[in-house]
Length: 285
Image (cartoon, rainbow, N blue to C red; front, side, top):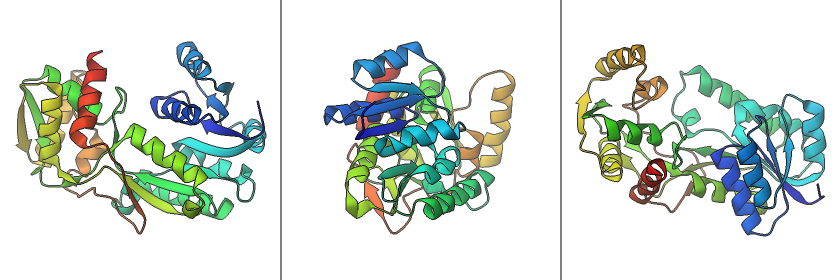
């Protein structure tokens, strides 16, 4: 492991491995860490030219050691899991953390209260760090968001859509989010900023469903229904072991606009139609 490397914590997943790929494409030395042993993924990271190491952020000594030998740190795990590690950063050491745009939208859900607390902890320990608040992240088979919807549409004759479908969405393609994060590591003007990151422009929930349907090549009928009805239907689906196209937490926010919030907003380039086309193709592979 070399001094001057970029440390990617949480490189075992799709976003982390994409970060390693983009960093190596810039000929930067990378230390890629993973918590769960996945031989195939580790081999892929090594094939990109990254040095690899197993790391659980709860092992504070190991985290401190790796952070200390790195020039910059990209924390892929959500900020509630990574905020405590901010205390290991050197003064001014470039670092990027991921939060959520929903911290500025949903003031009732405990998960976002914890994220706000995590942001405050990062700001106290590492005031120079960059905190990115992405909107809905999508674009790879396990994204847990639009990949879930696309899969559902491919196999179901009817797709329930909670609410009126008028609420605004602005999903961000995962590779674009990684590009923004890497740019933030090396751009001093981003230092100490908290920025929302979103796709190029807003769409309604109805338009997002229609775009996903077209990308999936599905014949499913999109059926709008009250949120309470959708909740009852979700419970019925879960009893049979079938995954509903959205998560329960998303259901509660179905009628809220989810466009980017805050003083600093970064808009990315991949249009939703193109991002969903790539996602559907990757699911079909």
